Amino acid sequence: MTQEAELPGKRVLVLRPDELSPNDRKMWREIRTESGAPANPFLDPAFTMAVGRVRPGARVAVLQDYGSPVGFFPYERGRLGRGRAVGLGVSDSQGAVLRPGIRLEAPRLLRVCGLSSWEFDNLEAGQEAFAPYAAEELASPVVDLGEGFERYAERLRARSAGFLRQALAKERRLARQVGEVRFGYDVRDPGALRALMEWKSAQYRRTGRRDRFAQEWITRLVGLLGESEEPECRGVLSVLYAAGRPVAAHFGLRSRTVLSWWFPAYDRAYAKYSPGLVLQVRLLRAAAADGIEAVDLGSGPARYKESLKTRDLRVYEGAVVRPVPGGAAHWLGREPARATRRFVRNRPRLAGAAARALEEMGRLRDR
Image 1 (tube, rainbow, N blue to C red):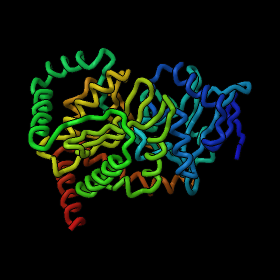
Image 2 (spheres, helix red, strand yellow; image 1 turned 90 degrees about the vertical axis):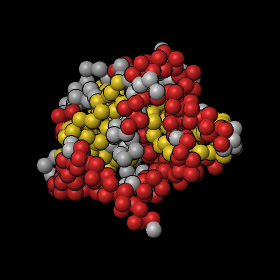
Image 3 (tube, rainbow, N blue to C red; image 1 turned 180 degrees about the vertical axis):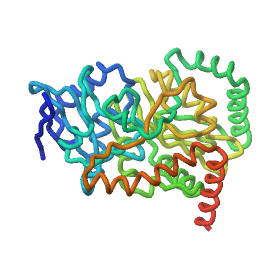
């Protein structure tokens, strides 16, 4: 299902992700490397191809100059041409992959793609075509491991002297009172993955938030990425065991050098041992030993992220909206709610009250 269109000086092919050729995927990665951007797995072609298998509206606009690809724009297309970033809601890095020096006008690109709007919630920094349409700038904490775990641990101790000491004490207590503690960094354990999804679903419900794993496409996407052998984009399941059973787990997405923190959860029956904290420290040590240079913890507030991070990346939330009927439908359907969330998020007292109200709603729903 190839479609052709024109941008000033460029030919644009619109493809389904499974129509990308091996050369397209090779060029995508070469252009990404040339740009100097972090090797985030969410902006690798393998992620878009996996989304394409579970989301039929996924497409890729391939920008060509004299027959050679110079850029790729992955997106999803819905009713009335309403577009969104590929994997919106679970993707932690979004945007176009462009050869350095390529300039785009976002509304024109949307027009040739047949889109009335394009929504993003984790647009990476440096996306000049889309940045003017950002409604909010967010911090995405990062843990730098390029100098090794011990160097990172030194910096962590200097900033928060008791953090690692607390994690080690919790691990010893878990081993003493429950049983032998074992950690697997990159394991194929279907039972542990099912447990992780159940814990995470319960957490979403408990905090009054939308349960991502109640959406079939997300569950299928995690399964596909967990089976991937792509070195630039594959799932990594890390599990903390006590007395032979999983007590905490994390499913992330990795490239050769970047690990994206994605779905962490733990068994609340062991909450007093802080198994999530123990898992985090174990995982960072193992990731550093495996060649990971940065762990992207993703946007969104969390106390543990502030404790672990070494710096912040900037990401952006917003939408490009064209003055057409589908664009109006997007604005009416999404922007009032986005503005309300932004208003609450920027007022800590109100945000705290909203979080408590959501938790109470979650408890009532589970009764």
